Picture 1: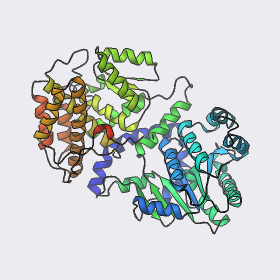
Picture 2: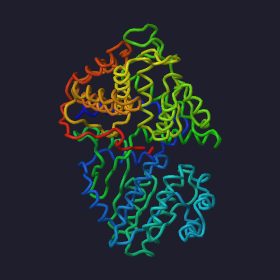
Picture 3: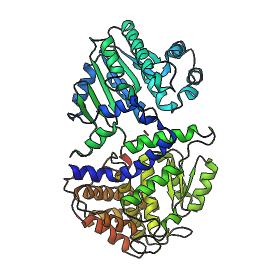
Picture 4: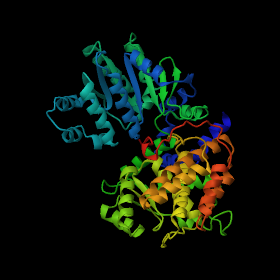
Amino acid sequence: MTKLRSRRNEAQLHALAGVEREIRVTDPSGRRKYLKDFSQAFRSYDSVLNPEPMKNMVGAADLILIGDYHALPAAQRFAARLFEERAQPGDRPVVLGVETIFARDQHILDEWWRREIDDAELRQRIRFDLDWGYDWGPFYQLLVTAREYAEGIYGLDCMPREDLRKIGARDRHAAHKIGEIRQRHPNAAVVVLFGESHLAPGHLPRLLREQLPEERTLTVLQNVDALYWHAAGEESECVEAVRVADDVICVFNSTPLEKYESYRLHLSRWGRSDEEGPDLVPTIYNLIDSLLRFLDIDRYAAHNGKQPKFLVDLLPEVCCGVSDGRLRRLVARESAVEPEQEAILRWVGERGSVYLPRVNAFYVREFQMMYGAEEAARFLHHACRGLPLRGGENAAEPADQFYTRTLEHALGYFGSRVLYPARAAVRDRGELSRTICEEFMEAAVRGNGGKIEENALQLGYMLGSDLYDKYLAGSVSRSRLRHLFLSHPEPPGRAREICWEVVGKGRSGRKRPRSVRPAAAEERRTAG
């Protein structure tokens, strides 16, 4: 278990260290006792929790306290899903209470509830951007879900939010407001979304036990660091939830790296004008640096060989917050072929970012950790080869093009898994073989250029998933992985040989299901 936990977490811990250092400089409040109470309260769990028992625990509770990491959109999206699942036809009514809206602004929320004002006026009048400052979209999704299914929505918070010395008074205020909700809705299940640190046992839950002793209260935590790192040692490929105590569970819908990177981006955005947006350059460079550390690659090596020469000088330009016109100019420099340009633009639209090797530029429209990590790994593979496509054309034969792109996608997917282990695995029809690789290649070559890319992506993800399984099983070393990133697939036939080496190197120790999971159907996990 310890080795498995180490292999799953190592690269992510490298990346996380850099993010946490920057956060501590900007926000030193993490050392306050109130926040430490939360981090120290939940260090272990009783058991892994499967979906059906978790659903039963939620269904049996009178009061459900959901911990919110405000900067992480996935936290609010989970709350919306849980609320919708809890509001079953024929079951008891459900109401929602939120920290985000001050109780003083309840009349504004009621006007929106009655559809007397629209969402823009609601956002402006509750001073969402000025007094809260996190992402509107996922919180608004929660409000809309609650308006459709709930018996009522209530604001629970009060001033001052900035002064941690008064945070206990805010807990007492919230407990009182929840008591009022219970009086108004005696038969309803009350769902509350409140900042995670408020849900330490001695904070808001203690006050509610004193005020509402008959309530069956369930605390639903999200992505608690210590519990996440512990769960990473389970044999199960993806642990979705754990039972911490009889009245506490924790769900995992994000990674610590994604969580803290989301907060760092908010700190960056708060320090810049609205027009500038968050500074994503440190985020991308931190992902690259974390992969370098994981692979033991020296960015300052002065000679080619086992290390790329001065990789530090090959770091890409990172473009974020630029106009669509600028993006199209970048894409036109990347490819002169119109269908390829449109494919890149669709890629950006679906994934939020793309690495363009011919111009050595990293474009980010919307940062999504899983895909950002994949593009960082793609860059690293090109940089380890000395950026062979920069300013040049790829004139290889179709079969070589296919295997070259397959290898790039395989390493991209693998890099995304070591930085974002929660990414869904991609399984094949059985143990991967050279025959399966050739079938994909032949089908691609019989088609057109678009078919080459489509099949290379699917096979590459399969190879990358298989490589990650072998790494977790200990049958592929980091030195071997570094060799793959440094490999040069340009000579005719070499890309095929490298892919076949990946197929034949080690065994994952996992049995494969008998069906293909297409890359296009892979589940998206985002900052949500």
